[in-house]
Image (cartoon, rainbow, N blue to C red; front, side, top):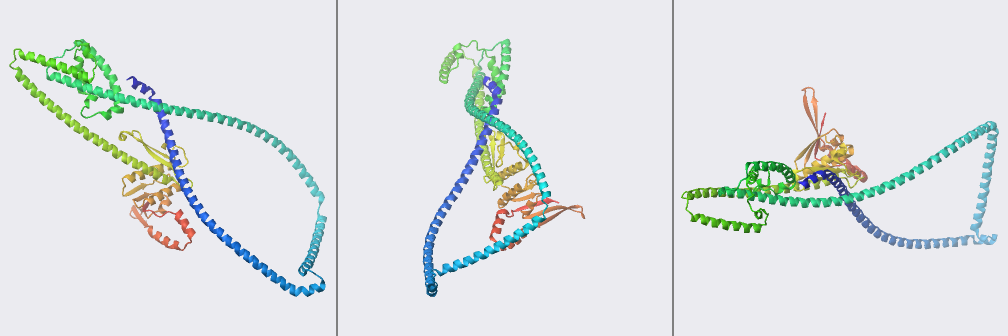
Length: 598
């Protein structure tokens, strides 16, 4: 009872700390999963880079061979060109040789180039001089027409304005420099505050680690206390059963037990009522944790203090006067000592029985004994039959409970695994290739059907938060992921979705369409929607409108698969890049029917 009261006082703070630690553990597990996914993605990229390096090495070796061959071809071409130049020089020597001997010019080509270059330089200089002269003449005429006094006055005024603006700019610069110095001082103060906050955070982390270790020790102590309480409950149940059997045997054998007076019985009843109220509260707390798991049908009423049989036995035992009993007999003994004492009393009873038999017999005692023996035999037979039925019922109950737990855990584990995959597929994109993370957790892992479960979802690039703090679109994607995960365990032939895309933007609507397209081979889907994106990617459309003539509803249908065939024939004439872009950007039509209210 003292332990239960202590647990009641500190239970709130421990539960809050435990909840915070569970949230921290969940965040760490999410980070671990992200790290594992990132590691897999990095290993995949590493393999691709290694294969690219190998192919580049092979290509480089081939290019080196081609380069060596090209160098040989260039060398041969250079030699061929040199031979052609030598042949040209020989021909020129043959034709220009006599002219060079008459004029005394050693290199006719150089002479021709020098003369031609001098002529070109002369023509170019003459042209430049004429153009420069024309420009100077035009400039002189233009300058003669200008009014320099007006322009000079404007320039002086402009200079004065610029000087005043310069003075203002210098004053503004001084103010800005003063503000910059103040901002730098504030920045230094902020950096010192940030450093202090970092140190405080590190201290808090250390406190959290210490609290975690303390929590683990407390949980270990709690488990030990629960085991001790279970053992005490088992012993108490055995003592109650033993008391019941003893009292029943005393009634059958017609043993007269010493009873208390009426006043003593009233005082004992008052004390018993108070003790029963306290123990009933503690037994209810203990039974809510572990007693329900160990109770059996065979001795179910002995584990419950408020049971009618237990209360009756307790009252009957309370009426017995134990004051005349020896103090040695009131001591608690072990099983072996109890057996020895039982044998001792049985031997004493047998001696007394022999002495009674030696006395004058009662002629009616035999008939009474036979009657009582038959009643005892019937009672024992009924007791054994009830005991056997209770044992069989307990076995059947345990089998059903075990099968129930196994089926629940199998369904829960499969749905949880499918939920993680489906939510990741529905949230991944080119910017977030790893997608988000979602998982289910049980409140009671030992008997999951006795408690609830929690559903947590963490969108890409966002920290862990409760479901109530997510946006409408994020909640919708999470709910659809859970729905598809449950469907993966016990598939249904088709789905009917009523405006599930109301809170989704176009990107998330496209993701939902793509997922339904991927699962189109497993089930058919009827979507009631007002989004054009669902219409575009459906197999057929069903529209509901009002027929004014008959004043009733009218159904309109449209098969979109024939347009798919026509578009497929038209796409055959497109180039490869457009076809690739169409395959990447536009998903195929799923087996889905989109219905909209008109």
